[in-house]
Amino acid sequence: MKNSEIILKKIQTLIQQNKFKQAIKTCDFILKANKNNFDANVNKANLLAEIGSHKKSLSYYYKALKIIPDEPFVLFNLATTLYDLDRYDEAIQIFDKVIKKQPKNIDAICNKANTLVALGKHNQAMSDYDKALKIIPGDIVILNNKGIVFAGKSKHKEAIKCFDAALKINPVDLDTLCNKGNSLAELEDFKNAATCFESALEINSKDYDACFRLGVAYANTNRPKEAIQCFNKVLKKDPSHTDALINKGIAYISLKKFKHSVFSFNKALKIDKQNVDAMYHKSQSLAEIGKHKQAISLLRKMAKKERTHDHDHDHDHDHDHDKKHMPLKEKIYQDVHFVKALNDKIYQSFIQTLP
Image (cartoon, rainbow, N blue to C red; front, side, top):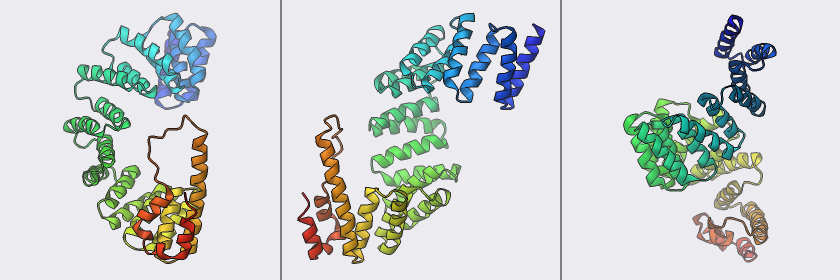
């Protein structure tokens, strides 16, 4: 018994040192002598889950629960492992067992809510988040989770109320500032979105996602030079960030630096040859500098993709048609960058071929 306790302490030390494989071998040493050792089974299950062997961990959780049935800590870890395996319905059943035994277990309530979100059961998830907030009012993580669900349903005003409530508690919480900035951007309130991302970058100057989103906010508030600076920082970290390259190109268009914009779009298309946004914006720039044949070549490629896309829709009755798609012909006619080019015969000839 004493030896077992000493070995279990050794396992805890190895866990603290992140020596998980050694810790697993030590668990096996105990289990070889006594396969019904509760602590060794639990520790091995947790360790296997920690190193990503979720399926293997399950049998050890179930063995532990045979020794001590319905032990809340083991049930909770089992449920989170089932969640990681995308076995959401089973995870919810286990979280319910934990909550039945421990009605104020915030972790179980919130993780159950997160699992409901994964299943698309947003209203039930909201109900659980509200239950958790009654137990711990003003919990920043719960408020953010609730806000993210609202944002996922495009209810950004409600989402912002959640984020504002969290910021009252901690005005410098990085995640909350970014979440609020994202919702403000979705509402096209780019000025206030920029303020959120600026604050986030004051906290962590290496948050490159916040830096990218700040660039987008600047671009949408007529600050293209500052936007380009943001995109350059992102691209220094990740040269293959296609969205940063495309948005950088668009910022150059607004500065009328069309050759610079073409250079950015070329880089994006080198990474993603079929990127429609890069193709279209490059064609705008080419039209502006009089390279009409190249612009038409890109637009013709887009038109071909559009026809294929529409044909696929005809055979896919389950396709989501909620997002309105503007036909290329209409898009070109409404685009200021093609106004002069539309007088060119090459464009007139091409446009006549479009539906």
